[in-house]
Length: 99
Image (cartoon, rainbow, N blue to C red; front, side):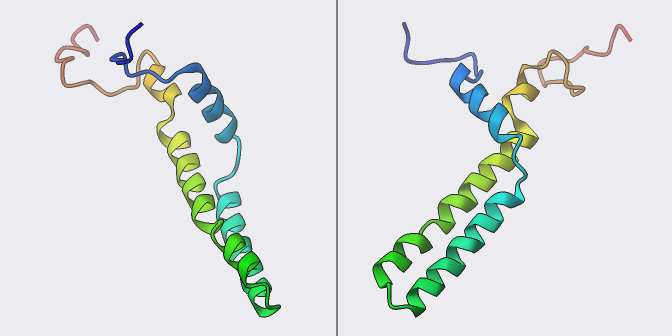
């Protein structure tokens, strides 16, 4: 078994994750990030400095998950696995010759 995978397809775990995350609206992650910042500010006002710092650091991962979610929706593995995407690859010079 080789460690290098040259077929450029996603594994079964990645496909399963993409299938589930594509169901979520992208703005959920934005609201979660804003909520963590608001909660952090509230905790800071109540003098809970360490907890405020902990909760405030959740904003960046939420935003990164939102970016991942958007990429999955736009360029997920299903798009690459489809037999015809409508665009000719550079190697396929005569893809429309029979049409």
